Length: 213
Image 1: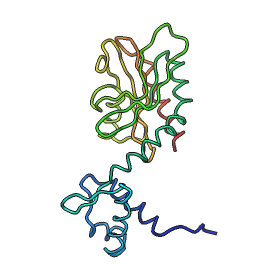
Image 2: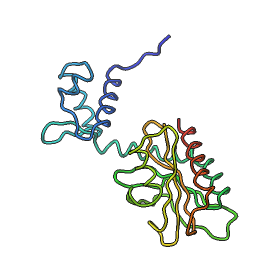
Image 3: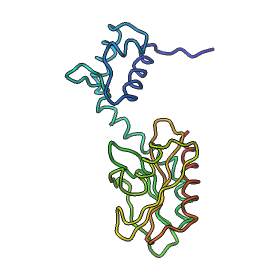
Image 4: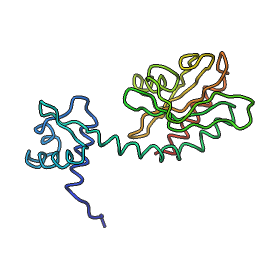
């Protein structure tokens, strides 16, 4: 037996998904056509979503995702972090370097989970909450590479000295996780990343992606 569902809630969620998939917003007419409902229904849905700051309308009347979605999104980070920690711990201990999970936050890369190795004499201090532009550092560059060349099997990105003098990074994007855009990587105090690190980071990114699906 199919469970009962709310048609209104379903339509509201579909509105949010449609708006999330566009950068320029949608008009009431466009939403009406895509949802297959009349304009009056769309107006009511938008008015309700606006009351909760989940939708905003610009001066031209185009609806866009509202800032209230960001508040909901912040609550997702702890769940994502918890799912990623086992793979990050294994990566940090195996490589002997600080491992991290980084997600897209606007135009920035935001570290949401960090694990430092327990057996090294020294390692790079890298904290959850650290953010940097997407086009700097291995974590952000790995995400951008996945955007430009979507692949079913990720590669890895290497950088040196872009975020911290003397530090090198390796990162691989998360692939196939709906609604999550990010990367898994390590940062270490070396001039050149050892050859085995890149493939190991790819494996860790795959493990995290599987945990999040």
